[in-house]
Amino acid sequence: MAFSDDEVAYLQSQPPARLATVNADGQPDVVPVAFELDGFCIWVGGVGPDVARTRKLRNIGAGRSKVSPVFDDLVSMEPFLARALRV
Image (cartoon, rainbow, N blue to C red; front, side, top):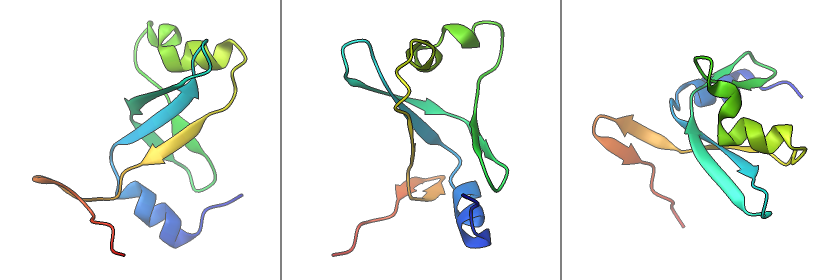
């Protein structure tokens, strides 16, 4: 599934993200991550030789393949301000 131009622009405006994986007990494990978007895929990674030992990669490597990116709807980083939900 390709992202629309509006979706790409929105996701690129949201610098932090979180990645939810499933731990060995079947519970969610959510960690902040940096990400890149190429218009088709969301790339999540890390830096350095220890990235393979992170919980997120251990969870996925153990065959627990349920994964979800979580994006905050931020208005601003300085000051940190999330968009309010309007009902």
